[in-house]
Length: 271
Image (cartoon, rainbow, N blue to C red; front, side, top):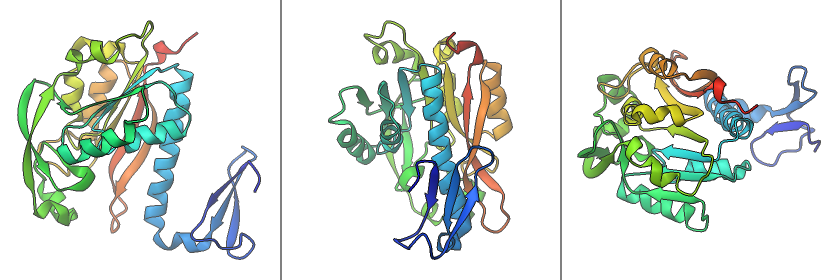
């Protein structure tokens, strides 16, 4: 297979049988597309968006010389593992407050000395709060909205777990310890709670050269901010959008429910 060819396939079919070659603009690269893989077009598109988002972020981390990624809402460590697979070698500092997910996160990072993990969440105020559980990667400090209940059956049953919440500005010095020229990047995926995490950075948000947040057009969680409010808050702090990637989409209407929004502080670009 040529190095300039991307492949989307299902199974081990012969590329000469059911595959279509699609040119990727003027890049010189092509996509080999297995027609059988288009049976679930919506899932395929979302998977492609995740792939493109991860590569976009990896490129920006290198371009902006990021050497510490704050991974807030780490779950089982999926984000950190993707960054490592794409060549990021700097420090990762992951925060995951729920007991079961944190145990998986520890296992993911146990052989990586520059991947630090902490068993608490981040927010606007230091406190102990109840988080809604048993929603897989969608556990949240916020209850589901009526729209969320209609969309996801998993919201019908829940239990809660008491978790510790700290402020981001209170943990940054420890997280950046030993770094002579820290250039941190903030990734947030906290199921409707990202603005609370962001607020907890206080004036230290100016230290971050870039950030990533899951922003919602349709509210899955009661009281969560809409996309416009979130992006305005981030832009007011000096960040500018470099990419928007759909995370979830309604099958019936095609409406995007949430985007991964990637933003950078252009003035922080190394000379």
